[in-house]
View (cartoon, rainbow, N blue to C red):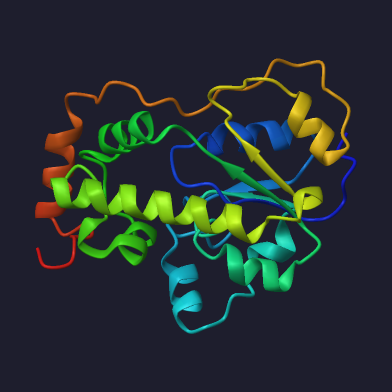
Length: 219
């Protein structure tokens, strides 16, 4: 069903509808990867291997050969380096209003394990619910990221789309951008932030006591 046969990169931040876009791209026929969760492809390990490669200055990620479209991390964090490799690709910036966005991040990541990719991006602020300073660090990063992307893609509108998947749940703009027909399926809505499960805090504390979960720098 996909018409555009180049690479498609979602360069929107966490919790901006990236999983919804992932599902939409799959419906449109793109072989798509969402982050680096174990099991998402052979060798996926929560980003630990990709972080080591990126920190070594090598941005030719192995996933580029496996997939057509990419959402979540580390892709939105290294969008400039990706553009240098794929200057003819399509780029999608997913966004949300910042107050509901940061509230969603704080709620979602509270009591969840610390993953290598978030430590690489935020250091001691990898958990936005940890403190007001961590919350503000995420807000500052979100604002700076969106501003930089918008400035860079001025005049490149043919390959850039800004999309609010949680506010405009429809196929029209995405399909027009990709030159794809509108599918006969409802627009997906994936990975909403739900109420935290009551056992999650205790489970995370147990994992950390057993040394099964990474700690924030300085802890």
